Length: 133
Image 1: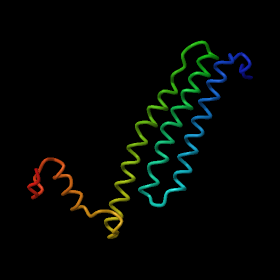
Image 2: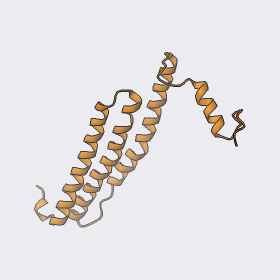
Image 3: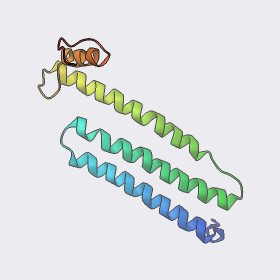
Image 4: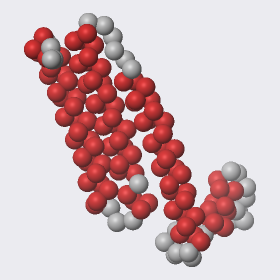
């Protein structure tokens, strides 16, 4: 048995809006995955959709259960923190693995490691050989 009928109108509206926003953001991320062509383009859309979509749905859950139980229910924050921390780390590891694979296969779609290393050194303040002011 649920006590949803005891939920105030403002809480029901806030919950509904936040769930719809979360679902829309997640759908946008999924569409972005299908729309982009390469792995490196596809990897960004779902991570944003996952992070913001999960945050919105978790906030809706916090509002819903806090109002129904007349006490703060914030254990959903742990879910949000877990998703926020793990999604970027997973993205970085997948992108590095794909980049390593592309370089090992000799693909011309990614820059060789020497070009990236040279760009890092130039950005760190080493001279490029050009005497431009």
